[in-house]
Length: 232
Image (cartoon, rainbow, N blue to C red):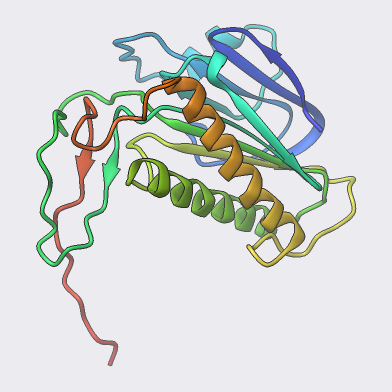
């Protein structure tokens, strides 16, 4: 499905004529021959992210680009049916969503103030099926759901403060109308994301368990409570 070009600090996924949807810094729909995952250095503080990515990519094909603090050595992929997923996973900056009535934040070693910390779970999903723009958005939602469910099982949080997803479709493939969890594409995406997230976490943390929220260096907790209202 994809061809891969990987170094320790860059992963390029190539497939000519792909239609992409990204929720990263250069988010939206793209028609491009490639997508990229770039590892940034410790203490990264650039805010001109498009210019930074262009510098890093040089003469490589334009395409949606994600940033992470995780080395591309820890990228892992999974395939099932018409879907392929590739993930880099790091959880040094967990984003909690407490469900208790008081929304109490546990004691952690983190700080929610200050600079963005690039821990990041980056997920790329591609399908050989042809999806229209609405269905591609549905695939992105299915992917985010699978990522959150896998992380909740592995590290008790649904994500980090900087997770991002890129999904892609082959416009020349057999058409699929939907990409939700009950469809062939959606079910395959859920399985691929689950396996790839787990494999990348295993690679990143080797024989150790990923850090818990209390152990992680950086993180946030959504402790504020919203006001509930009835619709009249």
